[in-house]
Image (cartoon, rainbow, N blue to C red):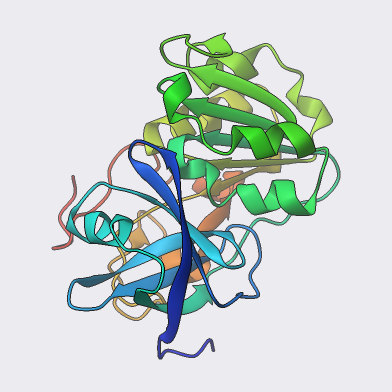
Length: 252
């Protein structure tokens, strides 16, 4: 089992990606598969799950108290890292990556390791798009924005609708859950759901499947241990896009 004690790392560089998203680099590289996550300890604040956007980086969107503090740290500040945990993407053959918003973070290592893959990147607007300069150099990049300020005008599922998805042996998806559900339904309708791999985000406390806070209905899989990446067929009758649970375990 991965060491349960956090490794203390020093922040070496902070890159502003968008007005609300930053990539934080640290002085240690972690051996992880694309899609695996770590538990990030912000001393005195909280410990939260974060996908690795590289062997020595996490990409942070400010959405709450912990991420606000994390996003405000500077080079030289210290944080703790536990992991990596869970399972990652299992790419084979021709790869399609489908990202919405900061869901691009766990998919970025795929582009680093498998240059030439097709990468569909969605965001609310052009100013919210992540990693475009890098992705243009190593992937067949296709863009969708909700407001039409860059690329396809609409959601990523709309862009995918007119694509021949049968030519992709691996379709990796990460983003807001309703976006993933729309892609899930599209893959199912096109008969290629068995090629889909979906990265789920749930409330986590331990990261190793002991507390049960990230269990998903109806099969009781722990997202931290059995995921966060699940094959599409496994999620067919799951809670994906229907509900999740808060810190107390209540459905919401």
